[in-house]
Length: 212
Image (tube, rainbow, N blue to C red):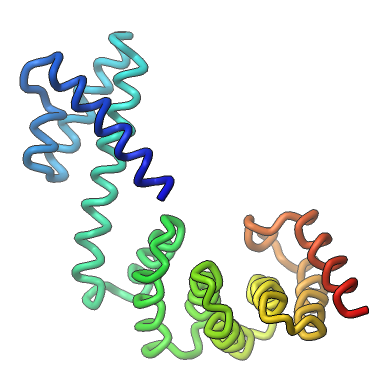
């Protein structure tokens, strides 16, 4: 919803800009969007920014067409998702997840689950998408598979702890969180950036209180 509001505001601003000028590369791109017309619009706007001409309006227009082009490309890729390589589908699903399009991302993760049932990351990310969709029971099933296919999957244990907490299965939630803590020291990349050390500590204390 927040993303759509931002796009609507930028659209209004761009419409105002169009009323002030004659035909330009940005208009041409929006009338006939393609990778080529997008690049031409970006080049024109970048040149305008370098000249210091209406710098803030130029930045807004760049942001607008960047979002517009991202929407166009993602829509195009979703329409041919079945023909994409596994890694490409996984990346597309992750992009959709980050854009809060949970329903579409889940469909793509499920296709990967069917074709690659031992791929832990696809199960884990689907679990996250289901959790954020508030389908906690299904999230738990997916995360259970993520752990079954990789018993050292740190993120899967954390998401499972959060999911089981929502399902009021507090002892199990605490057990999964404690397991994630055992694995956290071996995580070279620090695991999921969504989990701060403070947030995990708070969840740990919360679960301890609920079990008492």
